[in-house]
Image (tube, helix red, strand yellow):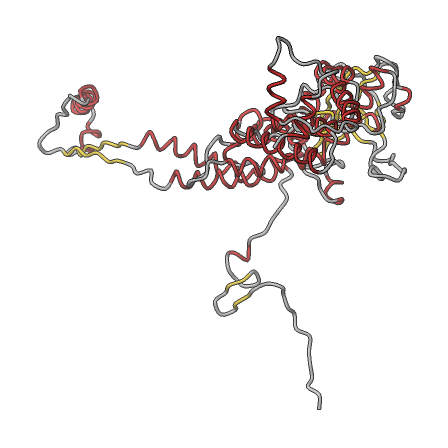
Length: 483
């Protein structure tokens, strides 16, 4: 006969009924849980914390500062003059500063936006790039989440990454001189802080969450410990005196009590390194020292908790090298890698849009379809490492030209593209590359063997002036003849 079975309630966790260990057993740990604190909604609290705590200031500011401090470099083939105008206009219109501020307020409040200011166009209408007039782009106006109200009844219905997001935003704070406009979403570069799932995003008026909310308990623990340690400094050296019949003297008052107080004043006055304390033979004087052992370890643990919570290493957040033999370089390298990931994910589409608007505003033309740019690296190599990379790069390109048939024009292009890493080749112009291409084609028809690298250098040193790049081929033959 088959055995009878019955339903048994089970849980996906470890339990030990005898030892009362586990989340389902009657112990103190089983009472632990998580509850919402909604710190992001308390605007005044997070503003006070940002103004008062330097740790919160670094937690909010560090990543936006690192994401925008090095800028970008245009990697596509574009007229050098136009490239210079774009770069200078980016600085003149303070676009990097605007993006930096928008990132900061999005991390502090949970959301922010950068309004693209185009003269002659109504903010309520969609942004049509073909209608951006020459000289009409005037920069960015930064608005945090408390200055904007999304219209939750109007949603984007067009298929794409913005599907379902608010179509319009209302400006509710006019302190910056902006009227109470209604903004079309295409004119607003929206940035959320910590992104939330759908149900939680609804509770925040469809914005994100402040970075302070997750670390608030760690911050208060660290501040409480550090302030408590500072208070203990006043009690690090306590002095006590045992006075015979002290209670009777205090209760009696009058001259006996005045005499006692005069004696204590005399002790405080003369008790220096060279002084002496005078007490009655029946009195006892003692000193007590306080030990601060363990406080530094506790503060270090709190620092590591905070640094880990915000994703910023100790060497960047607290300007403190990690323990052991590490110099912090590997931590910074990993951190800059994370910042690079955030640049690609959160900034690239917005920067390309700004380049497109700026290009149309300056030149009256749409941005070239093959326009590309790269973020400048945050990690800076030492001079020795840079020279090593430069040598290896040049040798590799010379080998590719000499043995693989790579053209010097392509090699010069690669040299220029890696100039930010190697430190050489930034002065190579498009004209140099064009001349290299034509001279290489002419040189292919020659049958005489190319000179060696040393001969090329000697040719360059002969005479009073530098060889004419239009007639001499010594700098091209280096790629073919160097060994």
